[in-house]
Image 1 (tube, helix red, strand yellow):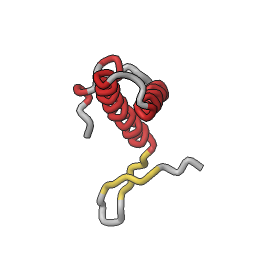
Image 2 (cartoon, one colour):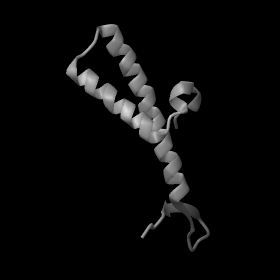
Image 3 (tube, helix red, strand yellow):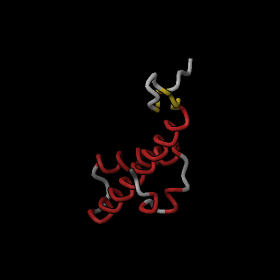
Length: 84
């Protein structure tokens, strides 16, 4: 599980969509090899934090749509919600 405290506050405040857009921009820059080495390292570190933030947001969304189930033997679990 992601440690929320390890995500910088400015990233934690971003919506999933904004974080993903910034992550995509960073990936493009790194792939193109633009910038100096120090900038690339900083961008990579920020990209890693953005990725963790996006993953946490997706887990939160999944938890909201998962359905709690009870099996015949009384076991409790979850299953993906049917959205149709």
